[in-house]
Image (cartoon, rainbow, N blue to C red):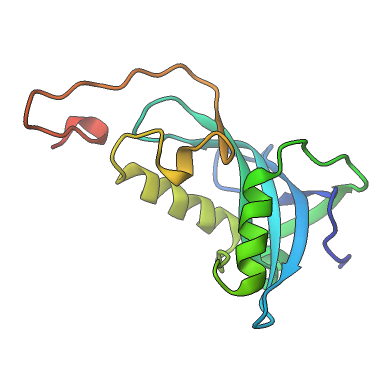
Length: 159
């Protein structure tokens, strides 16, 4: 299998309903402890944050190289230009190299399930790291539901 390199687009074993999803390699980095992670941008996914809307792109997700190797199925393109906004990747990379940040160690589809489940249980706030503009792009309009005074309302209207 070809080595991961920035600008590659790969298909991977997707979640059901996301068969057209692909990933783009942003970088391959090694921590001070020797851990190797590949940072990817994932397109054509469906995440439903508690703030509403639909997230279709995850702008940066660091995956351990061995887990990503288990996930990818076909190299589609090489030499693609990287996105202009790599702020979240660069911030993560600096911490990862020093040992202060980690990477997901699950296959990519399982990682997306984990992110989706974690997002479901977070309070509805655009300030949560999973929903910051540099990490995701929310394409559907949304409205924050207002709970009666003294109650917090989560996904599905449960307190």
